Image 1 (cartoon, rainbow, N blue to C red):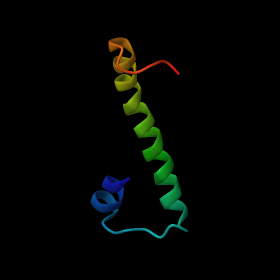
Image 2 (image 1 turned 60 degrees about the vertical axis):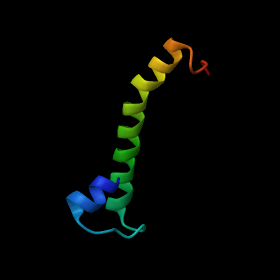
Image 3 (image 1 turned 90 degrees about the vertical axis):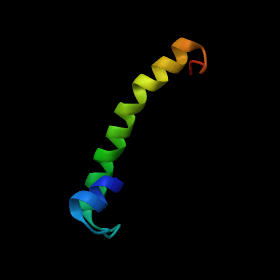
Image 4 (image 1 turned 135 degrees about the vertical axis):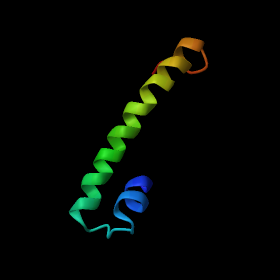
Length: 51
């Protein structure tokens, strides 16, 4: 989200703006996708327990 706000848009957006919330959904989904391989690796190595 910080990359979108400061690099692409160039300024901070109001929290009441619908574009802000749309970009937040994209950022949350990207964070979820990037966390999956790390979590699988941690479970495989025995560092993290299955939920």
